[in-house]
Image: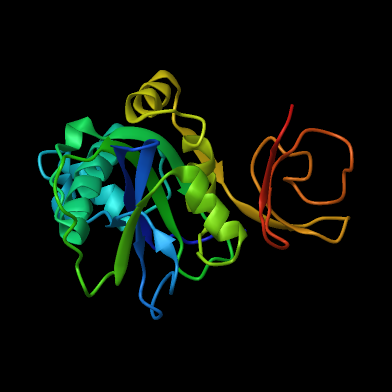
Length: 241
């Protein structure tokens, strides 16, 4: 059986700052056209050939020729992802970052049926004190919010989020400040989220990940859970076992 195709590798930078009530995260609103139409997202985009500058040329060529086929934690890919994450943050927000300062948090593999399938690295970064300058072709608005507020807006139906954004905000909500979030990310190995859509035997719709008893399909009412219930708002994240 031919494995699902990937359309490229990508990088996303989750920009953090200290707000009046603690950690805040930058969200950008996509226009109501194109990919992720109307959603609030983190800065990010494709890893381009230029992002591999200075890396092993043969390995870089193999990654570009066959995206998604190698290990997510490949050193050449991870270095290029850092460079791409910093570049995309600059292009989309006007915020300059040192790629070496980006802290890997997670890597997201979309469900096999996703039309434009990009394996995407998520990085955390402390934002320097400067104004956000949006790229009007990419985004129409921006906001700094505590993670809990962003999740509450989504739960109320006033903000559109994608599952990787939602789960990242849920993870960030445990940290009181930027330093705590960065330290937590540095202390743990980046998690790989290989996503699958799943219609549960309970009639609900889920995104499930490895570790869930129903990750391989079928109905297993008993057993560990690692899933996001996306049936209706508010979404709920379950992780047990």
